[in-house]
Amino acid sequence: MNLSIVIPLLNEEESLKELHDWIATVMRSNHFLYEIIFIDDGSTDSSWQVISKLANENPSVKGIRFQRNFGKSQALHAGFKAAKGEVVITMDADLQDNPEEITDLYKMVKDDGYELVSGWKKKRYDSIIFKNMPSKLFNWAARKTSGVRLHDFNCGIKAYKNKVVKNIDVHGDMHRYIPVLAKNAGFSNIGEKIVRHQARKYGKTKFGMERFINGFLDLITIWFVSKFGKQPMHLFGALGVLMFAIGFGFAIYLGIDKLFIDPFGRLITDRPQFFVALTSMVIGTQLFLAGFLGEIMIRSRKNETRYTVSDKVNLAEEEEQYSS
Image (tube, rainbow, N blue to C red; front, side, top):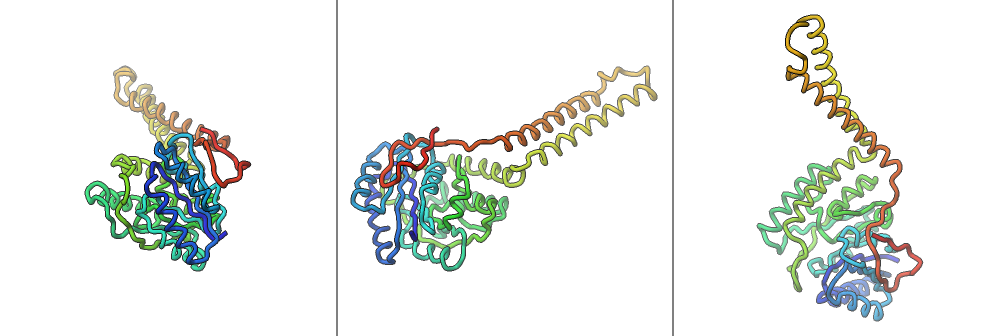
């Protein structure tokens, strides 16, 4: 199979048929062997009925339906798990991503050797104040923090080698940082392609300003995990030892001062250095224990389940299902 096209969605009933027909036309014109995997992330409209009808009409259409809304990252995770194509394409269901970009993205991965190609919506049809400017700031921070030189981390349309999506764990809200996750997993041949962005045709966006706040918090998380996620003791342990050493140094100073320099002066507990020493040693001990516990958790961590699948179409029933 040449292509797996993974499309997460939430309440996009109006656009699904048009998007499917557009993709199918592109696939036929290029003679691709393909599958379209729709992941219904707990829609409350008739999106699943539309997907089921499309699957009955076109055996290349497959569907996964979540029991409730678990988020885009979990939807992508489920789609990646099911994808069988040599190249995996992700795109949004709101018709703002152009399916005609798929051909060039496929060639960049298949022929040019890229492991991941991210779209760049250089010209956007979104609100300048509420989406464009925050997005530019967000992408600048992501570049500086991660070292991945992309202009648009959160662009929905991307292309991957199949082995990339099988070796990254997308959870929480980490779908924004899939290129960073891929880099951390050892896939460093990452490219970028300017893609056409289209104004939303139906409905309204499902994301508000809070996504940028969450995005920056996730950026801090992924920076920390990429640097210290495998060995948290390297950070917490080092800080703990430093803080404890500072406190212990003050304690030694107070002891020497009380015993040999001013034995009849103020009580040690009346001196501010005593509280500096006590606080530093307590904080140092806590930081060291945090690193120690982090090491234990990493070594004993099990695979976590993050979503519940309530229905499938055109997918083998023996495939593992996840529970919340």
